[in-house]
Length: 460
Ligand code: 5AD
Ligand code: SF4
Image (cartoon, rainbow, N blue to C red; front, side, top):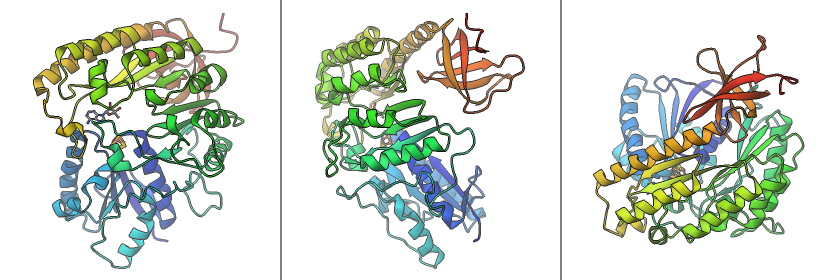
């Protein structure tokens, strides 16, 4: 079979990262080999994000650039997948006629058939953007059980993998485009998830992150027949996979975070002490306008319970600054929440109007300069808190899984709290990717930790 080169550029969330990997796996049997250079690739796929206007603008500006690459490389095929494809549909091809394929969030399995049609001479393929809510999530092809359907095993040292457990979202937070781009919630059958995790671990993967837009409601809205397993139960089942060292999950909506699930942090040894729990605002008035269905007080109770169950848990969050109608008083409440929780880290964004969402018709926008000023105030304070939090790890010995060589002869890996840790190896012992090593922390920055690899027996 003729080999061809494939370049996938992924925007946005981990959901998209995993989808890009699935696309790669689907295209492998057709002879497509991933390459780093976009300009000379035979097939370029942009897997896009539309969560904020900026992400969407980036896609259009890159498509403009790709038009030039294509004029020098006329055989190039160009595809747009992901959330922008889902929202924009045929508008993409109208604006950018050099785009050959538009593939919605639930149609990535059609890509091989689309390529085959193009190879057979068909032009003008219709966008594949059906968002069939009843469609079951496909049993994914992480690894080739029969050798024909997928790319080979994880690369040596590729110790962590994502496993998608559900698609879509039923929450309709008023600012969010995801229910429109990813459709209603559909949970994958438990057996498929457990199979995938087991196969990955057998192939040497040590860390699994379970993925979904709102994993806490796994199995609730779309119980798979005879499968009354909720997320806490799923977590316990996955956790019991022999050989699985680290388990994480994302993303969670605080309103669906049950006590049963929080208790898993106390019970499951391989569930990492790290939790991303997006709060979005510290003002009850704004939370209600956002349709988040919890109050600041309820959020704080959950933070307290999590810390009770797992005192070393590292908490992170997402925050939207400048939601329509946000007053200085509302923003002060957000800053107060930051002081109360002292998150280890956070992602914060200026509110961005998304077409089709309820917030887009609220009116009362916050002036851009005010948004920017509030965002920097928030981020500056978060940076100080992150640094102080990271200093708490000084002199601690952390287990780090090695990711590779970093700068200045140091090695780099991740702690179970998901901190990036730089370390110097001892006694000229070369660590390998995927190894678990113990590191004594002697430096703390805002975004990473640094220390020295210690050997067994050195710990005293
Ligand atoms: N504007 C700004 N940020 C948004 N997010 C989602 N929608 C918007 C929007 N319209 C943020 C939320 C979410 C993260 C993935 O992106 O904080 O948790
Ligand atoms: Fe972006 Fe949300 Fe789509 Fe992920 S699901 S790609 S964050 S819009």
